Image 1 (cartoon, helix red, strand yellow):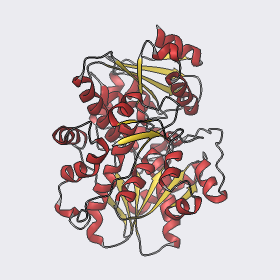
Image 2 (cartoon, helix red, strand yellow; image 1 turned 180 degrees about the vertical axis):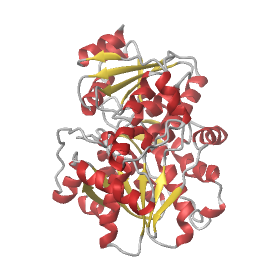
Image 3 (cartoon, helix red, strand yellow; image 1 turned 45 degrees about the vertical axis):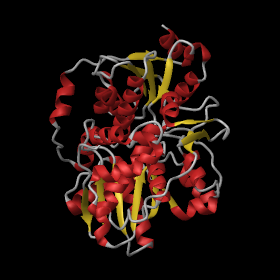
Length: 431
C-alpha cells in the first residue's frame, strides 16, 4: 500500500515511512492510495470470525509490504487485549465503551498500534532515536505516553494546554518519567497542534532529531481506530437493523476511521459528528463552507478543537463533494448546559454514568433518531467518567469509584516543563 500527501498527490511513500515521518514533507496529511474492499463473504460471516482474525483482515491491506501478516497478528493481539462492550441504554440506543484499556480512553487502540508498529520498524534497522512529538487536548497524551513507555529508541514529548485538561488526564502524562516528557503550553490545543506541525518543518530541528507524530494525523494512530467499529458491528449484526454511529468529535480522526471502515464495505448506515461549541464541522454541514473557529474551553475538553486536522481526510473520502459527504454525515453542536442535562437524563433513565463527551454523542444520536426511526444507534463513550471526576460528580451528585490504576497516580510526583511559545519548544528540542 502506498500513501500520498493530500496537499501534493505526487508525494508518495510506503506505510513505514508515513508512520515514521508523521506528516508529508509539504505538511500534508498522508492518505492511502486506495481504499481496499473487504472480502466478498466477510460481512456475511463476521459473527463467525474471532476479533483478532477480523481485525487482521481489515488492517492487512494498509500495512502490506511493510509489516508481514504474522507480525501484524502479534501487534493486533497486543493492541486489542481488552473489551469493547456495547452497553444497552434504551431499546434503540447503546453505548460503545472504549475506555477499558490501560489509560481508560479510546485512544489506547491507536496509540498501542502505533507504538508496536514503530517498535517493529526500529528493530529492523539500526538508526537514530525517534522523537514522538504529540499535542493533546486530553486523552491522546496519556494513551501515547502509556503505549510508548519504555520502548527502546523512542523518546516521547507531549504538549498539553495549561489548565485545560482534567486532573486525571494531566496525571497520566506527567507522572511516568523514563522516556516521556510533558510540556505545559500557555495556550489552547490548537496552539499545541500548530507548534507540532511547525517543528516538523523546521530543518534546524529535523537535522538533529528524527521526529514523528502520534496525533491522529499519523496513519498508524488514525487507521486502527476503525477496528472498534468492526467489533461493534459484529456484536450488533444479529439485530438486523441499520446501525448508526454517533461520535463525539474533536480532531475528527475517530469518526474518519469509521468512515474508512464503511468505505471498505462495513455496512454502517450513517455517521453523526457531535461537537461542543467548537463547531466548525456542524457549521460546514449547514452552510457548505468550512471556516476554523477560535477554540472555546468546555467541560468536554478533548473536543475543544477549532480547526480539526482530519476533516480534510473526510472530505477526500467523499471526493471533496459536499453532497456525497452530507449524505453520510450529520452534525450537531451542544452547549455545556445541554451536556450536563444529558448526563442527568442518561443516569436518571438507565443508571448509566456517561462522561461529558459520551453525553454529547448521546444528544446528537437522540436528535437524529427522532427523525430516523427504525434504526439502532450507538454513541461512543470515549473515556471513563473518572477522567472527568469533578464534572461528573458535581453534575450527577454521586460518587464515582476510582479504578486502582487511577488511584496510584495521585501518589506520584508530577513533572512538566512550562512552554510559552514555539521558540521555547525549539530550544528544548535542540538542547
